[in-house]
Amino acid sequence: MGVKVIKFGGSSVADADQLRKIKAIVEADPERRYVVVSAPGKRHKADNKVTDMLITLSAQVDGNMPYDQLFGAVKERYTSIAEGLGLDADLEGWFDEIAENIKKGYSEAYIVSRGEYLSARLIAEYLGYDFVDTKNLVIFNSKGRLKVEETNEAIRAELARHERAVFPGFYGGYAGTDEICLLSRGGSDVTGSLVARAADASMYENWTDVSGMLMADPRVVSSPLPIKYISYAELRELSYMGASVLHEDAVFPARMAGIPINIRNTNAPEDSGTVISREGGANDEYIISGIAGKPDFTVISIYKNMMNKELGFVRRALAIIEDQKINFDHIPTGIDSLSMVIESKELEDKLDDVLDAFRQQLKPDEIIVEDKIALIAVVGRRMHRSIGVSGRICTALANKGINIKMLSQGTNEINVIVGVEAADFEEAVRVLYAEFVH
Image (cartoon, rainbow, N blue to C red; front, side, top):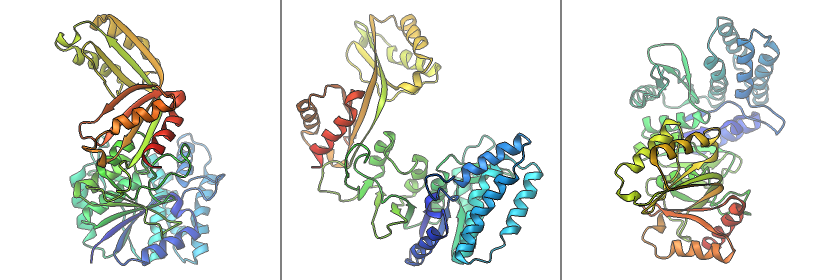
């Protein structure tokens, strides 16, 4: 029998009704042996996430402000879940321990992590699974960097002691100490991926409130089709443009081990969702897998006669933006030109300094700055060696009167990046979706 690791996000653990869905999902497949959970999310739009409540509570503690009322609200969230499920768990004992540790001056990370901790303890009680704390399993060095291999060995050794278990996501601990260290937001996804790798899982199921990924942003394209299968490489390209429902760090451990990830919907468990794997799969009705984009870039174009003969020109240009701690997205080049495509927010309060440095150190003939540029990624592994994809993109946009400012294709031939004016962004996405999907 194989092993599946399943992770449930905040919306999936928000209340007693959601936990009933979790139990039905877990019990529907005996291979679902290891469960990773987030802190309870919002029950409705006006509600608060438990993690946000705990962040505020920590600030109140740090500022020597009264926090009893907020702590009471946190307790109420878990008490209402337990009562709704008819659980006789030792909630008061858990709350008393946390309250005592807060009084002892435990860290902000400790306080914030209690959302996942309490969630995992409660769900373990409900499922009849073992509770396993991740404090000493997800291991960080003194600089807060995850020690991947040490973590893998620690989790693997712990799994051998448990046939079925529930783990809190989002946190671990500093090596050799009792101090809690938090992963970034979305860290429960990372924990799930780490557990999946350590368990040599046949599948890592990530249960959330959407039925996988869509081929385009539904806020831009009406009723886009779902993505049934996608490769890690394609996911990386779409994630870069903000289209992923998973943080990139959450994919890495599973990708290292070649474990497929299945994004599923807790509220619609009958939906197959999206499967992410090394090779992808057969969506084969369409040549592309998805379209994603961002609307706010700035392009700095540097022109200089005989640039290609000037040794180290590109290196010096990159060093200037590195000195300003600016990330670039693309660098289209010509014989006598170099363009840097940079998210506009990266250039806030820095643009004048960058331009001055370019002029002083590169001695260009001309610099042109264009802001309000959008980038759109058309992604699909079936584009590899397919003839005419770029031509179709250009023709479709031209027929709608949309001017292309930039066009580049990755050497792996699974993505084409199109630059258009930001004002044309949404229309361009709709045009390209219609060209390749409908």
